Amino acid sequence: MLRRVTSLPVHGWVESGSVMGNSATRGRLWHPRAMALDDRQPHFPFGEAPQPRADDEPARNPIMLALPLAAAIGMFGISFGVLAASDPAFGGVAAIVMSATTFAGSAQFAVLSVLSAGGNAVAAILAAVLLNLRYLPIGVSVAPSMRSGALGRFLASQLVVDESWAVAARRGGRFDIRTLIVAGAVMWLAWVGGTVIGVLGGSAIGDPNSLGLDGGLAALFLALVWPQLGDRRSQLVALLGAAVALGLVPLTPAGLPIIAAAAAALVGLWHR
Image: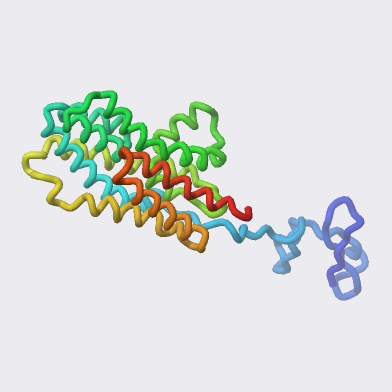
């Protein structure tokens, strides 16, 4: 039989008993090379074999995660391109440059809306800033998962949008940065590509308002928040945030209802 040797500096097996061989081989260390030629397998030499962590989620292809959302983003990009190209105060070139450098759909629509109504640049920028203030808590939530230096963080942050943030979220408040970057890049291409299509093919597309994209935008954000509503606390936060936003929409400038609604997330601090 095999008897485990634990007192030797090198763990191994020695032969004992008359069944395993003659006296010349008794007490001989059972080397790994000999074990490779034998069909008997030892236990894992350094304790139990490592098991995958139970809380780890299965790997998901970030491109496949991003494609359904990118299709919707591309449609909104087409709408933005059509509207911007037809507005003398904006123009097609400015629309493409803004989509490539700003990559913030709601803020870009806000700027376009203000300028189309005759507002000045300061008012347009203020509206965009108010809408994008939501990226402050989003950035704070993602920051602990980033391990790169300042330059890497800065570059990765350019691809943090609502959709890439949602698909990169993991249990325990963690974020898969690879998924965030890859998905964000796919969505950026969809947004910029959609804008280009809208600018160049606006006359053939016609009025984008007839496509019902306003309802599509609400459906997109509902699809993003739905997977996060797995417990009563999350559901309470979502309902409270929705109530705050709906109550403030008729009373405050665009953007402020979103920021006020984000304060509902403080409910999550209870009993933590």
